[in-house]
Image 1 (cartoon, one colour):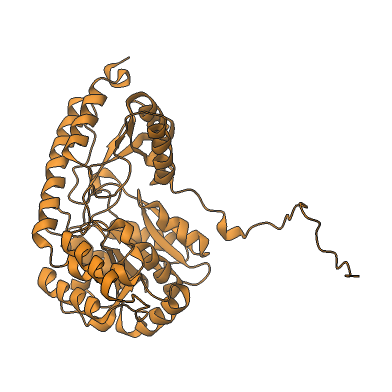
Image 2: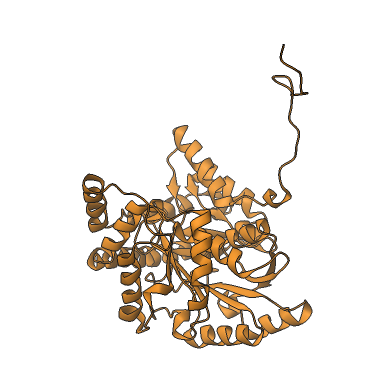
Length: 402
């Protein structure tokens, strides 16, 4: 007769708690997407302005390369650092676009930029280290760092500085605490679309070196600028971590493929982490990404469409009284001050969805302290989306004083 070793009876509750590291906040824009999808399923017409996802497909050349690979290739694992051909093409990209020479050995292919952040935070920081993050900023920076027991140190930025950190702010933050171990800056930025000038970028890299802190440059929106071109941190130092992706300019969000450029002395560490955490980025996505570099004409046409969307949306928002915006240099977002209408952007965005069918992201996703008075519009969709958004806002009682 089998012995009873005290195993729980079927249906008995197992109450061991989850790890404390899992107690992080939601990525609110994903909650908005879920609510918008539910509204659509219920028959409501929704204009999607909430998610930073290009309204265009992956380049035709990328899709063709992927289809050919499915038929002709077994699509097994690549090396952990990625396809050698893709790493070499990315190095060539830096020479062509920025006149910066990069050894392909320093390129790490990742499962989107999100994996890049996990890898970078794991490689660079120990438990309790302090990572400076500008606010407003991409919420997953602080959530990932919290999950890894890294302390996110929030640096408030303002419209007067185009929502970008300054040398003085970094120095003051370091002086008030126990120093800083790193700074992460995105340029162009999410949610504001603003960008560092080359001089300010170089200055931030210099102050990090003075503080003996890592500088991480999120360059995921490079290629999507509408005036002055963007600068890469690699133009000013080889001791920085650059993270980029094929999601935005290349319109390949769902393919989950990105890259990092890391200092030579760290390559072996990133290779070991990748081997153990992910093995390698998806092979089919790497094949498609390599082909995407040859789709410049198509990609530039997409950028031109975003530029047109930007102009239409900025003018239209101003026409309905939503004119408190620092004009975006790049990406495809407008960060709009609605403080004259609400101090609860979460509720305001929900009401906008319910009453107009427009889905936007509450500013609280990007700034826990001041985000209650802001909302973010994404203009990554179609020109028809921009027109529909403005038409619906123009008829909305809230903006008509109703």
